[in-house]
Image (cartoon, rainbow, N blue to C red; front, side, top):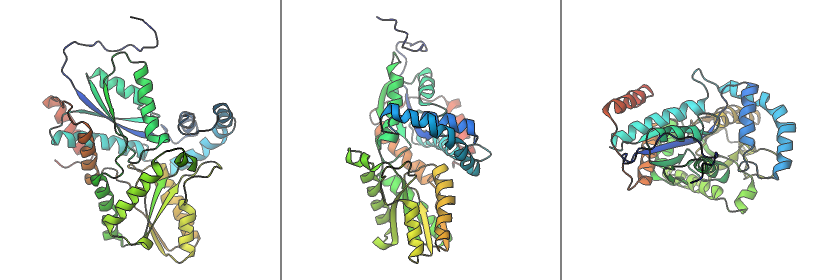
Length: 365
């Protein structure tokens, strides 16, 4: 057998060890701090991913390092600073909470598995978390992206990172990948509950469902993202019993000059305001954790655009975050995809630590 150095050193394998199962919840990522240098490191990793920017590699790297990484990090750092919390980046805070609450929910369902979270870009990385899971004896790992709708730049990129880790790993755990859950009843019900709760407290306006955008060419190349976003929107509006004129489906976060999926979010809300719509309520169904794109782009920038063009009342409806219905749905999705896998035994002291951590993050005992 070859002793090729491309394989990383691994913890010793104990023959006959009991099978253990793990779930790895993967989100996009975030800078370590709202500073120019931290954002530059993050953007360099994020925008270097060929899944994210699909133009000729050498041309793009010249633009990225020659222009974008010289000008964008400081501007983005100011935006991150506007939404940063005492606990850190909102996306990381919520993803960590979801991981702990998912562990608690699975334990309550007699599904004793190890749950960890990882970031596709930034820390903790997918590779280091898979290494840690493997050190704990996991022989089966379920990869659970935090993206309900499948897309190459998001879901497939997570899978790429797992494959890259596996390529340098000698004893690879059995792997399963969740492609999407855009139409899962629990996910749709959680979204509907989020909207209904907001309307019950704040009244009701025109509902805008804003999904993250991708270049339009990805649709023509076979990416299912556009269709899955519209199916999510259709199921949500059916659940809310909304007539066609009571809602809009849009796409946000356009980057560069290429044509992206339309209609764009900000021009849509401006048009609504100019046409006499006095109130809009915006939810971002494709984001399961609040982050820069929801808290700064939507709740601040798009709000200002709506008011500037004559709108009177703007409401941002938060992401699912740690909502109990969402954690239950996430647990259901995980359990469905672990069908037939052993769920093992978690020592009482570990279960107690997990329960305490989840309770500290808002779970109910």
